[in-house]
Each structure stands twice: as structure tokens, then as C-alpha cells.
Image 1 (tube, helix red, strand yellow):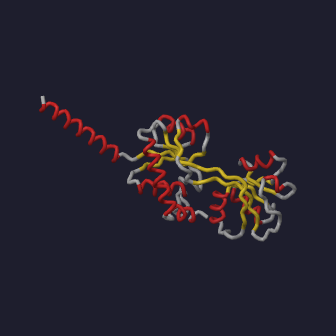
Image 2 (tube, rainbow, N blue to C red; image 1 turned 180 degrees about the vertical axis):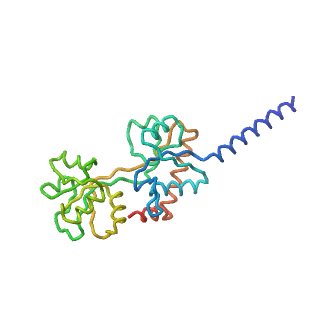
Length: 245
């Protein structure tokens, strides 16, 4: 009887060890979408996105192999609901997502505000309404454009971020209402750093969104947040972000 119990115990331990080894060897699947400069499918000057780089450093610290897959947003969300991936990089908070998503601590942010030329001496906006009566521009397809229209401002439309920056530089308008992170990155690529000032208006945090269906997700999220805190404290976080400004 004792021999039989010993054999069963030994087989159980071997099976558990085998499962642990497979779990350790299998890269953790992570879904993302192309969203410069947070995550970029095609690197720019070797840069793959500040959230992308941060994720690499976090899991390097945790000694976990990861596989980051660029997917359409709806598919990434579906995989997260099903537990096919650890989670999504990067996503915003939505109340309805709490059913299947466990949010990390904030990993980055999305700031909207006004750019002006560095030599411009007009009013300094604090609220969106502060630019009423001024020459304002924004990108036609973006929510920022609609936000201006919603308060009675008809902004000069720009096709994309690059065009908008050039229009501001050429004094087509005096205030450009756009996202700071993507615009700062584009300003750097155009070699125009120092040519503009920025006035923030609104801010939204971004997170790593863990799938609640993924095994051990609470423990994984806890470890993730601890590693994130370490990288912020030791300067790695700021070093990564400084490359994109």
C-alpha cells in the first residue's frame, strides 16, 4: 500500500513539474494594435513605441518570455474576453470592460491640448472654451475636432498630424488642438523640437488590460504592477519616454 502511494505521489510530482516547465517555456501571448507612438508595427528609427518598450522591460524584470501580436482592435478585445491572450497593450478604462478585464496601474496617458508657436503671445488656454474667437485647427477625422465643434468652434481642418503641424508653423491658425504624445513624436521626426509650446486641457490614463479568463491573472497583475513601480523608480520609465519627445 505504501509503495502504491509513493508511486502515485511521484507521478503527481513529475506531472506538476512538467506542467510548470511547459508554462515557463511557453511565451505569454499579448495582443496589441498599431497605435503610434504607444505601439508601432513598423519601427521608426528603431523605436517600437514607449508602451511596447515598457512592456519588454517589465517582463524582462519578471523573467517571462512574451509574444506580442499586432491585431485589429476588435480581435484583440475578443481574444482577451476568451482568455486566449494575457491581455491587451494598450487600452483605456471603460466600465463595461470590467466584466472581463483587470486593469493594471496606469502605464501611460493620453493628453489633449493646444499647441502654439513658441513665439506666439496670445491667450494661454486652460479650458477648451478659452480659444473661442481665435484661429484654431485640428485633425478632421479625430475626436478633438468634434469636441471643438460641440462647443461652437469651427476649426480649420487638417488631414493628419504632420499636415497640422506644418499648418500651425505657417500661421494658418494659432492654436492646434491635438494629442500631445503622438504630436510630440511627429514634431521630433520633423526636426521641429523647440518650435512650439503646449497647453494641456484633458488627460486620460492608459493601462495594460489583463484577461480575467487567463490563469493566475490576479498574481500576474500584481507582479506586473510591482515591476512597473520599480521601472518608474529607477528611471527606466522616463528614459524610455524621453526618446519619443
